[in-house]
Amino acid sequence: MSINKLLEDNPSFHSWDSGEIANFGVSDKVVKYIYSKLKSGFSTIETGSGKSTFAFLTAGCNHIAISPNELEEERIRKYCQENNIESKFKFICGSSTEELPHLINEINHFDLIFIDGAHRYPFAEIDYHYTEKKLRVGGYLVLDDVHLPSVRNLFLFLKKEKNWELETIIDHTAFFIKIAEEVIIDDWQNQGINKNFKKFESLKHYIKLTIKRFLRIQ
Ligand SMILES: C[S@@+](CC[C@H](N)C(=O)[O-])C[C@H]1O[C@@H](n2cnc3c(N)ncnc32)[C@H](O)[C@@H]1O
Image 1 (cartoon, rainbow, N blue to C red):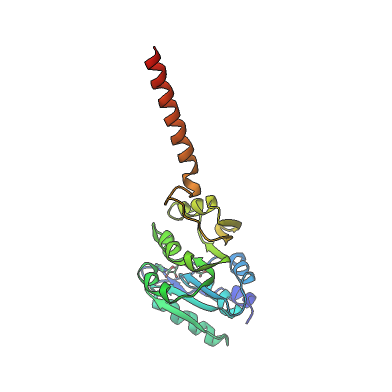
Image 2 (cartoon, helix red, strand yellow):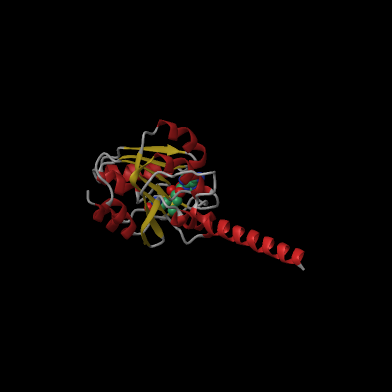
């Protein structure tokens, strides 16, 4: 089955807390862009599941989806059965924050990570923390809904990091490439978000010293 057929069908895999069926899927453009970055045999993971899961299935990735809603797995596998799609992926039913700390030890590497699970703070950051160390250099970190205040901090942090390159943003979904492993120097000192703070602190120190010296001379 082609990605286009899935996007035309636009099936609903999610539910509101009331149980009513819903479709929280990313846009067609995002599904297609993720798909364009995948190769058969890639090791991939997404927090959350749904329409995006089909980009990975269609591309033939070794894919893991984590979501606490078992009905999503049921609906995805049913849609696969009805459309002759091989539903060869691992669905982990649980919260990413509980599952990732254990799962990650079994993982050799990821080629692409898609963070689109719980959007309340600090879930995206926890998902990032556990997965990014296993992302190979050259791999993609895809972060959805970067306009949300609860996700935006992570987006702004990554934009300032030397080892991440923002390739593009499509419909609030950011595509970062890991261009190098993180180099940690003295804990927080090398992180881009702290750069201006360091400069400002040095300037403050210099001004204080100058004022003190000036006052002593008077
Ligand atoms: C915006 S939807 C994902 C949409 C999906 N990427 C798509 O294109 O259809 C958010 C997903 O996060 C899942 N979710 C909610 N809380 C979660 C948690 N604590 N851990 C992992 N996934 C969670 C929801 O069940 C849902 O699948």
